[in-house]
Amino acid sequence: MSNSLFFDFSVDKQAHVITVKREFAAPVKSVWRAWTTPEIIDQWWAAEGWKSKSKSMEFRPGGQRHYLMTGPAGEAMWGLTTYLHIDAHQRFSGKESFVDENAVVNTALPQSEYAIEFIDKGDHTLIEHCTTFQSLEALEESLKYGFEKGTLDAYARLDEVLNRK
Image: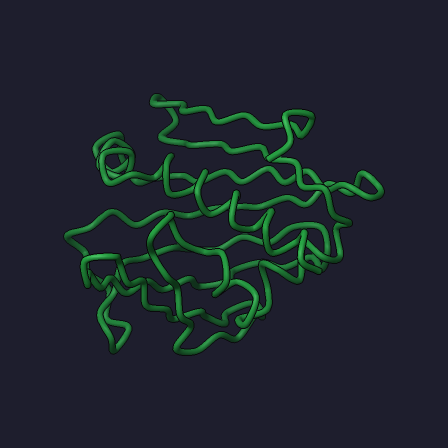
């Protein structure tokens, strides 16, 4: 990532919210497509050394993305994104859950809700990604599992994908 691109990672423990603001050197249409197209999101939605593969994805209100994350030592973790609200090229929100291969939610692991805003800056796009957890414990557990590093790694991979286009 170029040092001239804006970045901020903040944790509000009282509100149980993690906010990531990140600028990308690409127009909003390209960044939006990278978040909403399974063939593209699979190229970057993972921490370094991990891979993401969509089993299914229907980007619409009420739709879902069911995906598998595989790690360098053969680890496997299933995730489910449920899309709640979508304003094309501006924002969308949803819920993130750990699930199994049949999309059954694992309630022992933290779930979260998120909202992502896409701010058009011409040939650049700033996203503001706010993730809200049900409790301080859930937020801290997500941080312990590598939320910050995973997000930073994924966004660095998104830079690579956008630079190839």
